[in-house]
Image (cartoon, rainbow, N blue to C red; front, top):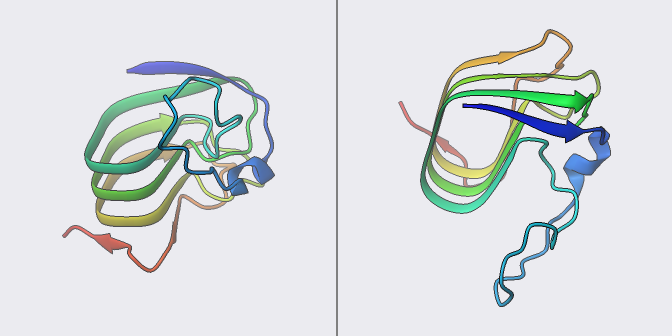
Length: 124
């Protein structure tokens, strides 16, 4: 799957806390800029992403993928731009049962995978 995004945001956008709005109907722009330029995945069970290539029109300092409160996460074969100053290429926050393989970031990405949160566990 090849996807292109506008990009153009800086690394501090990755630190935004996205509020919970579960009583509202989800709409494309309701949360504003998200912490990832590619996929921001939250409150998901059994997420499997494979054979993905991202591109951005303008350089973007956010991670390609942010997974938050995910149980059973597989990310296999991701090719995407990395940028100097990124907090991470892939950022896992409270992910239980993660399996990552074949991640390819441009050499400028300083941290390939960042892991935060007390609930993180890895799949063997």
